[in-house]
Amino acid sequence: MGKLYERIDGRMRAFIEEQPIFFTATAPLTGDGHVNLSPKGRAGTLVVIDETTLAYLDFGGSGAETIAHVRENGRITLMWCAFNGAPNIVRIHGDGEAVFRDDPRWDGLIELFGDADGPSARAVILVRARRIATVCGFAVPLMEYQGERTLHAEYFGRKTDEEFNEYCEKKEFIGVSVDGLPALPLPLPPRTV
Image (tube, rainbow, N blue to C red; front, side, top):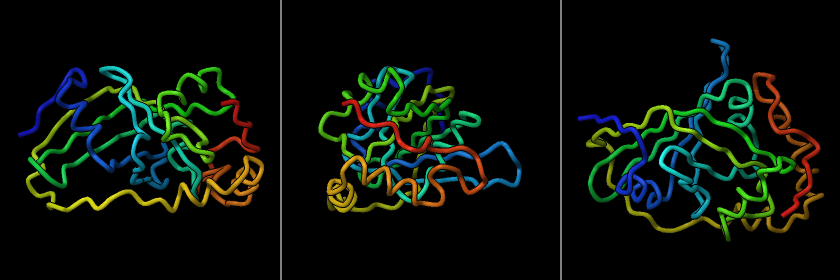
């Protein structure tokens, strides 16, 4: 039932881009560290750059586990599943990298997201695929998509860059992960774009 792919072809790309939610999974190298699994949404915050490279916006929130893990070891898995239409699950196992606001690539990458960019974008997570696979998804329930939640964008949209930096510095697990790994560099570099 499962199938491996060498690249993200047109049909798979369309499936990925149509999904309103995807999931990221990362873990530290230590055997007793915390595995992180996060849902990601907000339309337009994930782009397929080429046949083996994706990127998504990492926004402000209560933690920075994904950033900490990809900084330590680069391992990341992205997963999409069809909650309507034909059953399907896509997993991309890859090497992740956090690109921060002071990285020379920031301006070019952030432009890929157009209107999905927002004041609380703190990193772009680049993922270079090592393994691309699909499985059936026969047991994934059918659910109806109702729309985007706007609370996150509205909350952070009211903050200046300085206020956002203060927010990040006050949170316990943004500068370091729950396992004590370096996460988001603080103070946040200012936005250039």
